Amino acid sequence: MKYLIVGLGNIGPEYKDTRHNIGFNIADALVSGLEGDFMTGRLAYHAEVSFKGRKLHVIKPTTFMNLSGKAVNYWMKELKIDPENVLVIVDDLALPLGRLRLKLQGSSAGHNGLKSIEEVCGGQNYARLRFGIGDNFSKGRQVEYVLGRFDRDELPELPGLIDRSVELIKSFVTIGPAQTMTQFNK
Image (cartoon, rainbow, N blue to C red; front, side):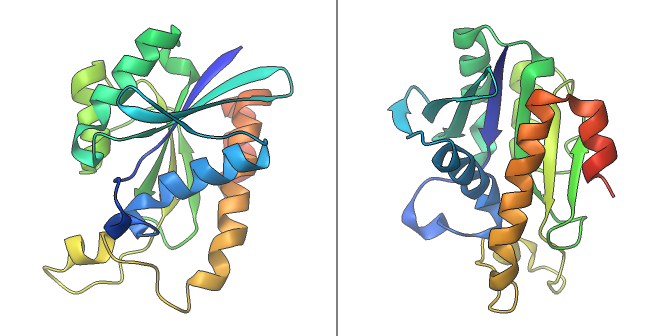
């Protein structure tokens, strides 16, 4: 079984460890924990790791968030991976910090990375791990908030939340989405 795990984010040091890049952070933790390394590939950093007999292709698109669909489409075709074996990791303003939500399909909910994937890949039939970043910003400050770094009081929680996200991904590829949703979507 092959899976494509996509951590969404933006490349460049100015975006490192921002809320919008939580997908990159989780992808890094997954690959590191499975003793893999990212290499520069076409439109993305790519790592290939194994977990319990499953081959996981993990990418971090280098196209910037708004063009993520180009990278996802390329890697799905290159690796011949069906949409049901794709999992996209994305930040979500609508969920409180650290709340994880696995969804098997659905709208982009205004997220530009997901919009791009829908447009280029032709639909919403792929799983997404939504990682809550909260919505603690004043009117008109959404972009600043999303592209900002986590607050000092949020930082101590992050390692545990990232570890839990990695466990969700491992569950998704081993026991499947239905049982994973039951276990993690609380």
